[in-house]
Each structure stands twice: as C-alpha cells, then as structure tokens.
Length: 234
Image 1: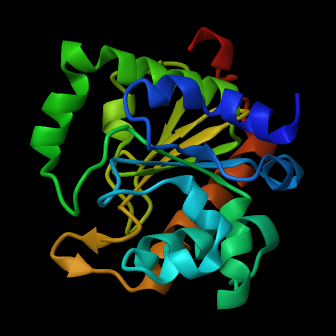
Image 2: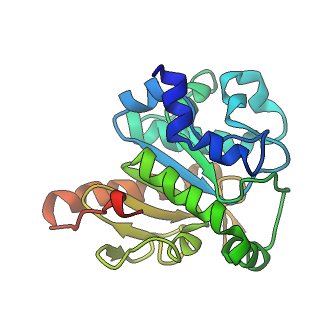
C-alpha cells in the first residue's frame, strides 16, 4: 500500500464519500504527519462552503476567503512543533503536518448556531457520521487534539471518565482540557472566531492560550500519573 492509499484508509475517505462524494478531511500529508514531533489533530464543526483538504496542497488556495482559520492553525502548529511562529511562506508546510476533521461531513456554511448543530449532529439519523468521526480519531491516534468549540459534542461519544480534567486556562473555553498520558483533548475557541465573552481575541493571544494549554499537559505528564486513553475502544 502506498502513502496515498494508506492516508485515505486512515482518513476513512471511502466511508465519507458515501455521505459526500466531493469531501475529504483528516491527515493532509501522511509522511509529514508521521515525522512530526507531535501528531496534532484539529476537530472543527463544519466547513464554510465547499472545501477539501486537497486545497492544502496548493498554497494559493489558502488565500481565498478562509485564510484566517488556517493561519491561526498554522501558527499554533508551528509553536507546538518547533517553538516558533511560522512565516507566511512556511504556513502551508505546518498545515500539511497536521490532521483536520469536521464533525459535519457535508458542506456547511459560515455560521450555524451551536444549539442547532448539536441537535443535528447528535440525532439518530447522523449515527453513521458520528461513527466515522470516532473511527478517524482511532485511526489517526493523535497526541494532541484541539477542538474548535467541539469538545462538548465529543464528550457525548468518548469516555473521559479516566481523564484528569484541568480548569480553564485564560482565554480558552470552559472545561477546556481532558488529560491522558498519551493524548490531551483541548477545547479552544474556533480559530476563525476566537471570541472570549464579548471580546474578540487577537490572533497572538488566541494562539498563546492554546499553546499554553499544550505546554501545561506536557509538564503534567512529567510529574503526574495519568491514565492512558484507549483508542482501540472507539
């Protein structure tokens, strides 16, 4: 099996195509993902219009309207992986070292109220989609999972009972971290709309808050006995 076939198998691409034949998410570049210091998975709500991770293979595509989301993700990835802020010329490379999935496997829109999204995502008719999301997490086996205001939805599917729950770090979502020895789940604001109460955060403040959450988990692992998250039970 070559890298591209393996990547699509991990990403559950064939199963996603049964729901939406023109959509794909997950690991972007398997070689880069496997070489990265940490395997980072971003879990967002839905796309803003038509989108596929194929766009990340062409840097020019990232300037077409939705760059704010990808710019913040790239900045956070670079700070976690290499301890530095990426230049614009490097941002595509840092995106390609990560995995990005959406809970909604059909094309979304610029904004959907969470109450409506929650009802639709958790309804019985969407069980197939929820199972794909679980399988993607199992296959990808990330070290760091950053949720763009989606952790509360995942908590309906995943078992966090053995996790150490850390109180909110400033400028992140409430109940923002579940820590295991092998993975951390972080609930951050959406990278395109990092609003803290009525205040819109600067890009630097938002990225700093997420990276601080990751660093806190790394330090906790050195001194605390944490349970292991069992990906195989997903």
